[in-house]
Image (cartoon, rainbow, N blue to C red):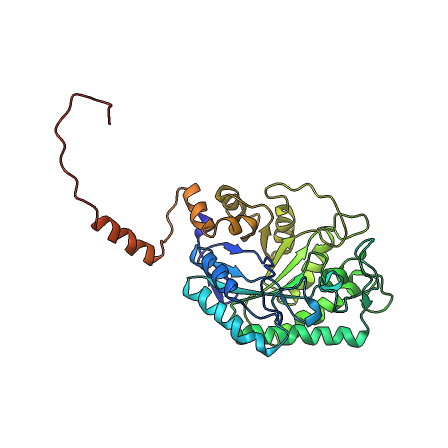
Length: 358
């Protein structure tokens, strides 16, 4: 099964094409540091057989949190805890991914100032963010660069830049949130400018696999569509991005009809038109669907979210559905052998004429 075949991305080989999608757990200490929960949570999914485990978004600035309790990477004090969770993921047999981002106007902590490309609230009833000055934009670029350095220091194998789900970089990319009239807004090139600067800055500190997560469509009139990302994606590829992780929505309130695999066509479009690796995400809940996606070249990897929250051993469940074998954690193998060795030996039963009765 192709789902369980290794895949090499730049200088890294993953044992299979299953990744755990970044999902905020809101369980960090007040200073954004790793807690015991994260060690158990991510370690369990690594033990469960996925090839790549992404941590939740790591905020590059203190006011970049999506909500209270989110993890940070804005300070050197975060590195020891991040290093510890990476070590555990590695020991459990998986590679570790860091997603770095900034919550922008969707900052969920009222005591901190929210920032955005333009002073536009997400919707009625939401607070109005401060529009970033040009100096603050360059400070933001520097924050992403230093975050990449800390990710490298922490031992991560993959780095992903978060430009999706209505957060800061998605806000710059979308004409629905970016109404600037300077070099950071207006046409595609200007709206992409901060992402271009960040990718270039990050690559001075990071030479491993580089992913970018996108919201391929805004589901709102006047917003980005997958065709816009043919432009953005081409620039990402030219800058050395290895894989585009294709999600959607978040920039504005929208009613979306979701169904298994509903975001896969965007990943397929970019893969076929740009010749870049893509990741598919969104209600991929069964091994059959995941295998169909990678076997038929619709995307290169699948990123599993809610299904892996419900089932840390989702990879094994998928293997069972696909009737294929994957390695068993050796501790469980030893326990199984011990259990069998310590069972009472069967006693031969006399032949009975009561066929069919037990």
